[in-house]
Length: 568
Ligand code: FES
Image 1 (cartoon, helix red, strand yellow):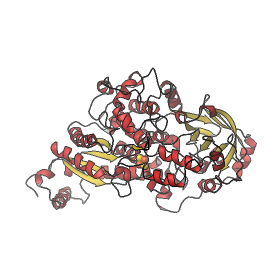
Image 2 (cartoon, protein in one colour):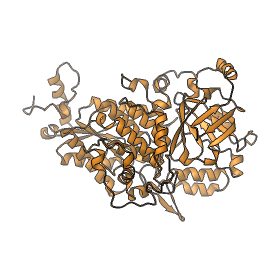
Image 3 (cartoon, rainbow, N blue to C red):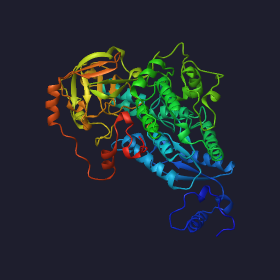
Image 4 (cartoon, protein in one colour):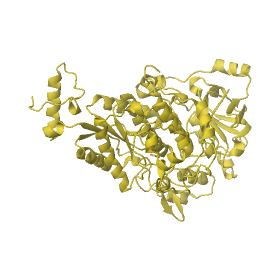
């Protein structure tokens, strides 16, 4: 036994279950001392630091130096910083998709936040699914947490334009498919799209989630958009460490941050950013962990009231570094102030009303005034109808208004393989007036709800100059993509939704004005098709089986049923 008894905090929390608590703590101290810590250090409050660095994760390349900066902040404030690894998800590195593993990362992170002894945590995330997973974990573990993001990459000047992943990746690839860019040129561009550390440089999912985490109050104002390679990002990390220590003295729990008020504010921000459609699924999952439901009808009301104010790719022109330099989230929140619920708290302990202050500078090229918005209405709308009884999403700010009121013939692909095999077949019976439909790519399928909703324009049409078509699916699209694309159709085909019954030649009607998406097929025909429909086989074992048995539909955030609070 030590002469210095541990206080019931830090390493003394959550002793291993040997049936003898004193022995468990004795053993824990012995092993901690084998790492060279003095007793004085081991008596300090503990801040866990979630390390999502990985050789597979380019977006998290800076995590090692961020950890050092967080540790500095914790040590300076009198704590003991203890980094620990969790699942790291990098968007382009995972099969079938990173979305398939978001809930695994959330489960891993929640388990480690709950099982290991710590008084508070700093969550270092960045790439698309990591921040949602960490916020879901924080919501469920409900210990004081500060979210730190790796931050966006910088755009690269290149031959008179600027490039950053991944809107420009898609733009150039579409031009290559259409024959407007040569193979040599596309190979040259490949090394220019992501030239610094950090997450995608546009208002894609990673950036949107950074802004949402800031809106929910998990980081101090202005921290969500600091570029990855700026010194300011390291100072934010140091501050995150200090802030975690303050939260130990004066706890503000995730359950106090994730409330109806803050979730509604986050939805407003998502709309005003022209942010990623994926963020809606993630926010639904995060809110769901605290029993806060996102109603897609309410989203439409908010969307009608909330203008798009941020002019960034993929819907506009700027990059994340422009948004940050233009004033970032504090400037945007100020602009939206009369629409926000200002009782919402943040980790600094202040309400939004106390945090809101008029910015000294706003660059109106990137953050517009309410009187001169990018669009007078929000970026997203939800659609309902016979094709999507539980809803679907359209990012109208990245779509072609001429396609908003439309009846079209469906050209249906049964799944990703069918899509890959036929989309560029010169014999494919398709015109630009048709609607491309992809089914069997939702959360329940082995495809793992990929970002395949951005169905490629058939190359024969692309080469003829067609840039957009109506496209529909039960999967997602990248936050960096654009087009008239109806996503997240629920229930998905694999769950027995009407999407599973659609066939080539059926008529579909989209009305953005009426918020409707209809399958114009009579009920008798659908009943006959339903009689022969079979659900997909359930995978035999492992994570795939857990997902197939537990994953919820898009309107419930695609969380696992078993991870939601018992009361929901
Ligand atoms: Fe990581 Fe885009 S691939 S943020």
